[in-house]
Image (cartoon, rainbow, N blue to C red; front, top):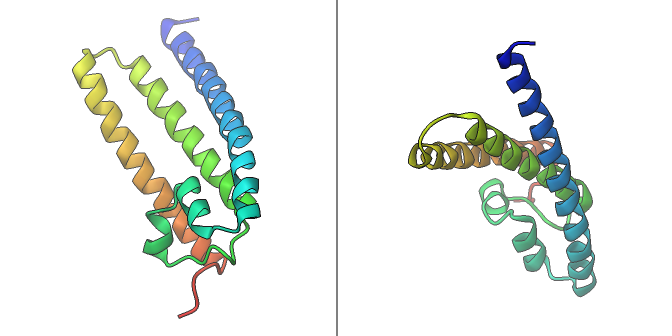
Amino acid sequence: MSEFTLTLIWGAVLFVLIFLVNYFWVLKRGYKNISKAKKKKKAKKLEDFIGFSLIVPKFKLDINKMNLNYVFVLSSLINAFIISLVFVVIYSVPWDLPFQILLGFVLLFGLIYALYELLGRHLVKKGWKKDE
């Protein structure tokens, strides 16, 4: 095999490994915290934990209408995808460290904004917007 195909295979394996480890770690940690917050019935705590402090007010979502387990799984998938993609891209780019860090920040913030924008629009389409 050529060096390029080996690099692609190594990058794909690394991406999947980081994605799975991160996803299951976040799920394990998060389900415990969601169940604690549901018992206390504090919607503000759920809002802070899930990381929707930006999309809940932006899309005017109603936390009481939302299926929190569904939303948490989606946000965990998004977070795992962002972390693993940024890591694999930074790891495979042969630049100097300052440029790798700069590229990492640009990718990180761009992916966070784009994917959480899509998640917010998806949640609005599901009908979980506040009644006005």
